[in-house]
Length: 188
Image (tube, rainbow, N blue to C red; front, side):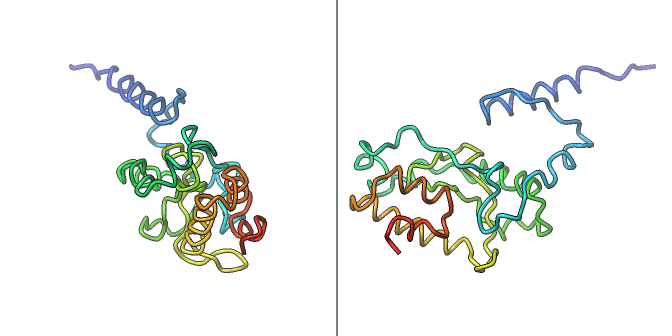
């Protein structure tokens, strides 16, 4: 009688740990296969919508973008496109984060894997703390959607690149509450 191999579970654990290190820079314990989905379910709150849960998505900055470098980074045409992560990466993260937010609607087409602090304002392109599955449909008491946030992002980007607003206050305003960012900065 052939004995079952014990090396397969070890290899899976090693592979999952390596993937976690590659993604987050820190080793994490690999969840058991049968508990992976429930371990991720509803660990983030939808109560903040249209904003992400600040405990799950606090935002993260790109260290290459500072006030001194904006004219060579974010204010250069095509900059955001040049650092945008692959859809393979963002789609995988979107599926995981939809489960973490406990959304009943799990259709990935209904969500934009949004950079909370946008690339155009020096947000980190790949840090999961700066990415979240933002609903494309209206949410919150003011019924705002991802397209409303995109409009705010663009206005802030233009204000920063036109030197009407410094980068750090724009980043802080959008990370604090994008729905009030323009008015807080005297732009809306």
